[in-house]
Length: 399
Image 1 (cartoon, rainbow, N blue to C red):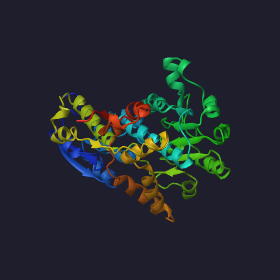
Image 2 (image 1 turned 90 degrees about the vertical axis):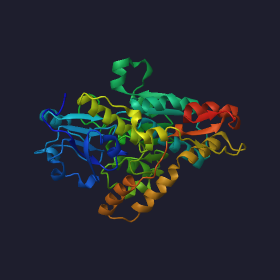
Image 3 (image 1 turned 30 degrees about the vertical axis):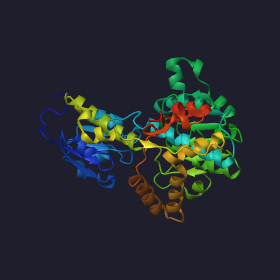
Image 4 (image 1 turned 120 degrees about the vertical axis):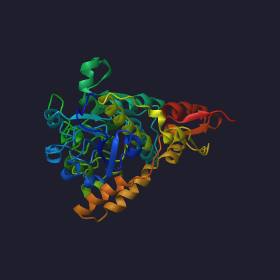
């Protein structure tokens, strides 16, 4: 056994109960105790060997000092809630799930773009999308947007240093030229390319007045006060925020100035969350030098066979309206926005925090676009690439 020497089987595993199928997937490793995130306390983790969390749990000395924990897994793509240096000093192994929810966030962005386009009666075709951060999420988005006729500009200085600068542009150029600016960077405050308040008053002033700004990265990547000031002046023309400074109690005035507002759920597709669970299971098995058969679980085998049929929209609709109608059948972002605003309206700071977390905890099951299909013949020929390559929907031939 490579990790946890001397610890008797079965392992004692404490897990956030909102990690999908965590009990079923990890029961082969030991005894799983699922708890709400609010109950993952120093007392709860003290006698555990393995801790599995989501981004709402801060993992640091305050949580783990004095505990037996030797493996921490975070079912997330981001790790700014984890004190990695502390884990290293303690010799605690760590794993997370980079890219697990990438498709989910991409689909959220697509849903937001089509919702904004329909509300404004415009087409996305011919517009310029600026992607800031081109890793797991931004990279996939960059590959899918051209199917809708958008030109893509990519800004990612660390990645540009690795791959060469030919395919990347500066942030200054992106801000000046992009019609859509979408953020997909980690939150960092040190190093050569810090992202804390990357979009500040100066950056906002450099954007085109008609630009749209989307943030699905971390709230503090955008200076919320600067954004609120700019929005009061009518810039940028549209804003979509899924992440907020001061989560889980976002500024109610900023919510009022945002076109689409959601409670940090862009990555919450069922497939994205499940993939995070499976990636942690693989990581723990690797540390324990065990073989893990991911296809051995019956629920995975059954679910793999399930697809949903889409209803072809009215052929008389415009290209944008047709695609937006198809997207809404898979994910209605306006419904998430409405639920969020209803619960945040006239709520105290404490109530906002409680309701924000409640919305995340009770988020309805949202399936990946790839789990939907539509008859090829019922998709206008000019839109088949957008449906198959852009949205990722299955095109099938009539039976």
